[in-house]
Picture 1 (cartoon, rainbow, N blue to C red):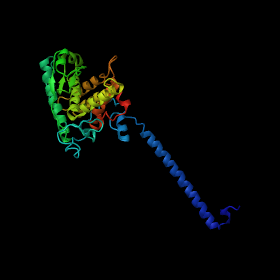
Picture 2: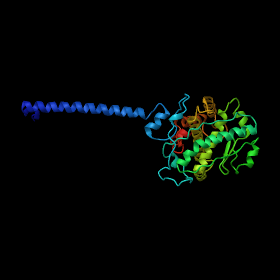
Picture 3: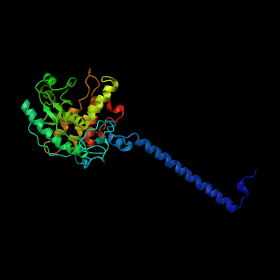
Picture 4: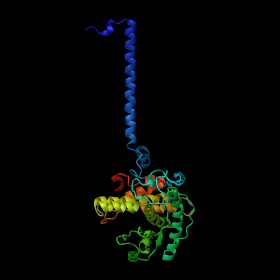
Length: 331
């Protein structure tokens, strides 16, 4: 059979051949563009930093290794919510939810405060005075955020007993696990026994004290807004000491670490929350994970540090949604 091109007039044949050539070039260019786009997407799916990961895939929370530099968020924090979250919650009413809690529904920061603190004294009265002043700073930082989100706010109670056994009369049964401090949801009380505080804050100007307090205050925020109740219900349903139950415990603890980082990162360098305080708090959070022989209820040292630093780097409640994070990031 004759080639159709050979029976066409020369002018038409040349036009057809030119069109085929042009189409071939266009197809080649499009194929190359698609390949380049695919390679770019491949690079985006394997980001070099945690901050890039959140920006690319839209998943809240800590991804990968934290940056090592002293990089508190400061004035880069997202704005404090100025109004209730579009009617998603009733004003001053706790919401018993985890991943889908409305506080984590958008990018919201904590208020910046000028925090003046007394000098630390290694005795009950001196420690109590320091912690009460720091709680006032935490209150001033967090209250606008919760009120703006249509959520309740209450300042926590504080107890600074001398010894750990004294704690057992201050918490409901089962609420007596102590590392440095402890939070009792049943009475909304932060407990900081001097027997555990003294060794933990040795050689610290104020950063280690703030790290211990801000973590327990993070648990207070969880309790006030309704997260703690939802967590307890979920953990009870899966088995308190099961693998799934311990993972839920780590998510609770790591969110408190992230909230602590938010406060210290957003307010770093302001009056008595100076660079040394931030550095000391960061150091305290590098070794705050599970210890050998303990249940896997807190997270590894690296994971605790990662979530605390992530909170400091982002200053964002959306980014502290540990309930949404992959299991690998709450190890």
